[in-house]
Image (cartoon, rainbow, N blue to C red; front, side, top):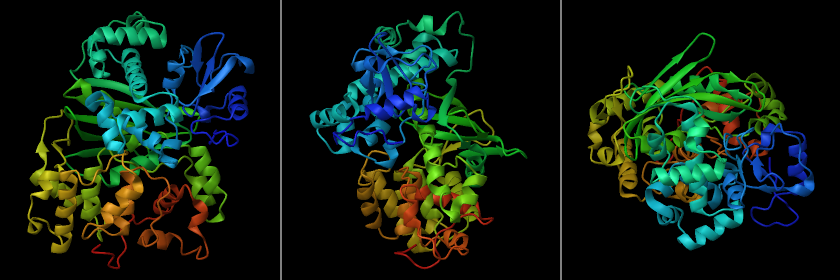
Length: 506
């Protein structure tokens, strides 16, 4: 799905011919990868917009919706270009720009400003602005403004929240700023976007939204993976006989706790499907962060067509890919929680790891009231786990010390497990901690950092799954080896588990 102009080699440059070909064919796979701006109408669209294809002389292409808006274009009311999955390039290349987009999506600019975003990425704010403008066509403030507008439009059109509540839930600092931005971006007031619908009474903090995903989407496999690992107190799931169902969990968000529930099923097309999401938040300002974290959980920005075509070309994987088209790599809503659970799961079964996590939640988690049966706690934060005694855990003492050392590094900020830091640097920092070996570090990268090209050669499940293909070379599956892993794991009746040999304390 790379649309970069290899002739120029300039960051952020798009190949005009490739982009225009995608627009003429209305190829839905490129929705969210780039945007088409039309000079004669002053609007920008997604590549699959059903309107008549504009003449090539009248169009320009932009990496982001913010870039098109910065150039003076407003969003098309017909194709709603902002209601698309994000670019898969953000996770594949994991450049500074891609990592910045994830943090902006999580609301970092709204909470910490451009300085906070730049600090997380290890740059000065001025240099970061230059870099993002060069690669994405817009600076961090413009990108954050577009994010707020997109969240606000979704809330206006799909919820019964009052418009004032929408303004602050989307991250705007005032109702006036909200009204002016919506008018500029969508050429309509919030009231006009909502139409004649009158907000009805609703549960405080309850929001119903939809998350766009590219198809095919193997929602049933994702649901089974999450349900098998659901920790009592913080997660609940229901899997129906036909494979459909739902998954819900608690969320520890910047301004307070919340819950999220997603309904999951297989989706085959055409191009884009939508996953129903229900949020219940103590503070509506956490809407953007909650939405972003659930998107990461669902691997919503993946390009399943490219992944399946690449992996399906190998005879060792062809049958698995055909059986589960659109398989996703399950992400996570909180890197700290995932890391702690990864260490709890070292050298034990999935069931045993879930039991250990449940004990930790019951003894050290923060009790909250959610109104959802089974959701009673937040997972304990890193500082809480770091303050425990190794003997508090029902595991070998060395592993308990490893867990406390990891938590101490997370609590001190020496280790950050969101999508912001460089992946290689995170891996190096993890391996420097006692008791953290390659399997654990790479499993954390797989799910917490969203790395699409992780391979676990020492994993017992992987070895078992590849017994019939002893000569296969996993390197040929790059850059999608994480998806190959999930296919292999899913093909086994026994869930994945870490290697049995000792690897730096694992």
